[in-house]
Image 1 (cartoon, rainbow, N blue to C red):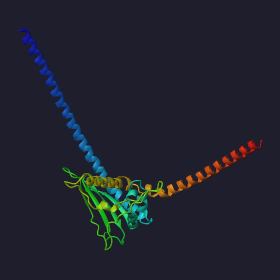
Image 2: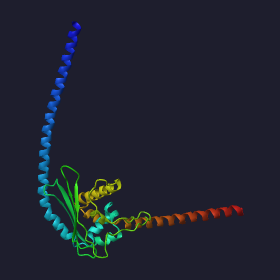
Image 3: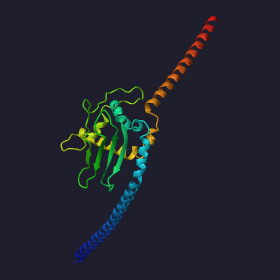
Length: 266
């Protein structure tokens, strides 16, 4: 009888522990739900503030574009000076970029749904479009939807391909594929191989760099010295130093020869 009573007491104690644990977890979940509501409210208010300031920024961006339009090859220079974007332009792309008048990045009205990047071009001998856009739409259920302008190339023109050039010293290697492929294949498809999906991921990274890095302050990159000029200067400096070193080595060898000759005379 005593043993049965002990077992019963142990079972009751375990049940009490289980009930307390369940009660604590339920209370903890209630607190987490409360925090989640606060976080959602905070996110909504942050989006409202961002929407408000997007409206305020718009005329300032327009004023900035007006000034940029008066600066020759502004966007071409900014792209080439960027450590990532500069690697994406072929020599033919650079000729097309000379007709690029402005770039615009615009968030969707509710901010969280996506954004678009637009390249505005002056009339040019390459394509009919006056603007090329790429739009990212964030879907609640499913992958991001991406759409882009179809480029209407003029007769005899087409997607420019770069020529592979080997690097000389620290000089920039020319891109193998045109930057304008960024406006071509845009969405992942079922059955796509890993290489195709990797290319699309890289294109998404390019969009993020333009939106979050180049667009906010392109003057940072326009003001940079072109990489190739810096490297050419460095190479010239190295050659000068090498010449001086060779001259010093020659003088040392002459001194040693004179000393050997004196010893022989003795």
